[in-house]
Image 1 (tube, rainbow, N blue to C red):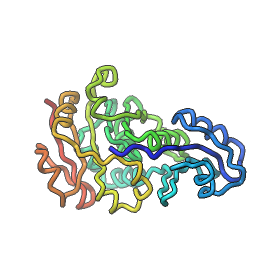
Image 2 (tube, helix red, strand yellow; image 1 turned 60 degrees about the vertical axis):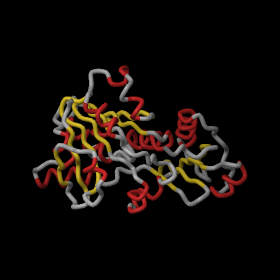
Image 3 (spheres, rainbow, N blue to C red; image 1 turned 180 degrees about the vertical axis):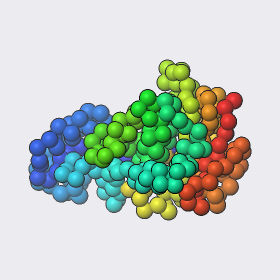
Length: 266
């Protein structure tokens, strides 16, 4: 797993606006990072002056992370709402939801949250009485996604309130009885492999923050013991690692390259 690049600090825009400092201070406290005064300095100069590896700054456009090597990241819902509209239009439901068998009232774990697009789709499916817990290994990604989910203005923003973001390693959390609680209807994985990130312009900014660990068979077995419906692993049709895990079924994604391996409960 790649660790977040430290030292990290948090600041505001070069010309600070009302409310930016409060958000920046909140993020600094969450991440255990210092808040530094901007004093009109540009990002590159700030990184150099303060000896930082990366920086989170709050401006009029939102919250952004950057480093000194052209790495940049900000939260957005990616294709989540497009997927919801498409599923409603075709009347078949999103392929991930069909693969997982998720229905209203379910408690679902997205074990590899990332930007949270899958979690948003799942949160729509579980309805007002359901819950989606998203686990993210990177504290920086988790903090920016949590803030984004809480502040994003959209007619379906109530769906975002059903997602609870947790920072941690899903392998450890799957063995934590206090975290697992009553179990889950479904657990979903979307492994972030380096070549996958390289192909996606939308994920360019999370290269240095992402976890590239391979999904192990024992992790799937542990997850299968905790679900009542299914464990789902998202992959690509043209790669053999998903088939090698031995899913009971493969559900086609909306696009030919995407596939969902379905593993039944143990």
